[in-house]
Image (tube, rainbow, N blue to C red; front, side, top):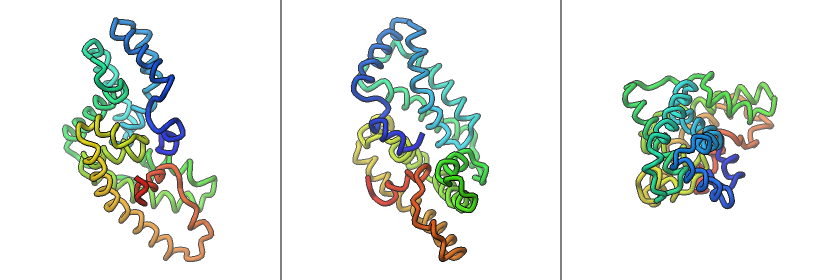
Length: 232
């Protein structure tokens, strides 16, 4: 899920009446209702999977993260006291699992044109234009490489705010830091990621100075773009 999709759904995982429904399901799950927890899994799994995919770049790891996050959530649901929203509690479990998994692996992936994050973004943003698709693959590969090179704290912050569409307050609860720290991390990450975008644009400009599509703003992975330009 992109930031554009997240904001179209209200900017966070749950809002309004949905939040009331989630609270009711959580209460039933705390009492041992597996069916109620199954509804929570169905509702939140796409976002948890997307979170894992953006953090790891691997469909297999994203599946593992989602599965383990929900297993841990079920095991611990009786201890959930409601001091935070259920979805922030669940996200915290998933983020910790993703970051611990990367540390345990002790390796850095090489981003390629076949990276699933690149493929998904190009599928949305190329508008069926093969030439534009080829250009965007280069741009997105450079961007994802820069994203993966960020520290775990910066990368997880960018994913939560720019790609998952969370507010600084929500991301702060998940990451266990003040919203001001989230804002600083986004500022720091913007500078590093903007350099990757600028480098790709310079290469495209040299390759085709008269490209009519140069100003068409990509929207999927670079629905990250508002964050780079300082919208947050």
